[in-house]
Amino acid sequence: MSLRIYNTLTRAVSKFTPAEPGHVRMYVCGMTVYDLCHLGHARSMIAFDVVQRWLKASGLKVTYVRNITDIDDKIIKRALENGETIRHLTDRMIDALHQDADALGIERPQHEPRATDFVPQMLSMIGTLEQKGLAYRAGNGDVNYAVRKFPGYGKLSGKSLDELNAGERVAVNAEEGGKLDPLDFVLWKSAKATEPADCKWDSEFGSGRPGWHIECSAMACQLLGETFDIHGGGADLQFPHHENEIAQSEGANGQPFARTWMHNGFINVDNEKMSKSLGNFFTIRDVLKEFDAETVRFFVVRSHYRSPLNYSDVHLNDAKGALKRLYTALQAVPPADVRIDWVDPMAARFKAAMDEDFGTPDAVAVLFELASEVNRSQSAERAGLLKALGGLLGLLQTEPTAYLQSGAGLDEAAIQAQIQARADAKKAKNFAEADRIRYDLLAQGIVLKDSATGTTWEAAQ
Image 1: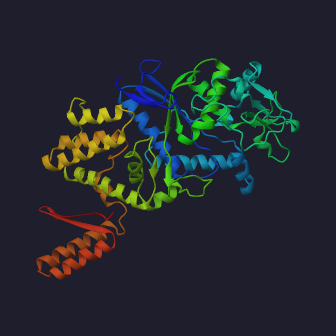
Image 2: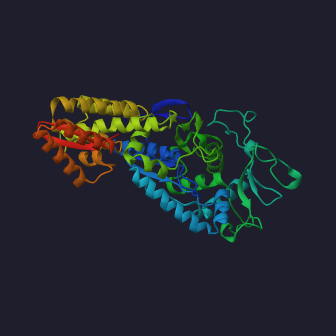
């Protein structure tokens, strides 16, 4: 393979070869389903959707796992606030997640495990860690991971134990039965009397629920094996979540966990990471009220997955205008159904871009060069290549006229009636009336395009 990927663990771009020839096993951290997904979640989902699409386009079988966290302090709190069961809340949010992801053209992973379905596997791993002296039972009923007993801790974040402060939010008070070290983290949380019954599991450690980090270790090992090819997620998960996954999994199994670690960059608003905790987030549904789903996807894809991405209406409008230029080329020259020939210079450049750490900005630049070529040559085969390459990014698969006319404020019949009235005015040499109709339609978001074959229209940007 010619694919090279930036590995967060090694801090270098290196050649990627799956452990099992022809088969890539990939795990990506998914959502905690207590609320609607925001655009930051969309970026991660789109980034790894592109990754798995390109892996498959490269002739590889892909087993893709993206988990769902359906038990968590925030979930419990929200369910209690809403007066509903945890399961009812998480079912609603998972359904909303699927609707949003489907709208953005995100292919569903082969496995989408819910944490609550893997509690036995988590308890088994915690038991193994305790047997190996890497976990201890605290006086308050929790089971904690003893970070300083795992020699490799810090290798993903690149920090020494003295530099890390994983426990800064949790006071250390051994007398009260809590953590013995501020770096330690919880594996099993002891149940509280005030918590609802549907967030408690019986175990040898007492009634309680799993900590956040242990779920991904258990599910990844169960579904992909003790060592697999790619582990992905947002850059904010690199520490402590992914660092803790390594400690748990490698501590329990004595094997390397993930061979390649990938982290997508943040979406920023006013130079701050978009997040619910900061209150500066836009849900996917909010954004889709203003912009079509493919524009949102294109906005994400045309930036490299590791780079920060600044959100604003200006940037989304720019993305919309750029995407319309690609669709305009396909509208003018209906694409032929072609099989991609990777020897073709344009296709080869697209492949080279994607093979270098999924370089979508350069791949998108190839699409625009192809669109310009289509406009010059009027070649249906070149238009077909444009559509086929776009499809590998999840783009350009809508019928061009339907895309260009989407979002119009008037229905087709009303617009065609105005186009005919304008034609009649021009025939009668009443150009003032013809201009009035054009500008009236423009004010309603309809752009008319005159050509030798007649007048067509599209929705204004």
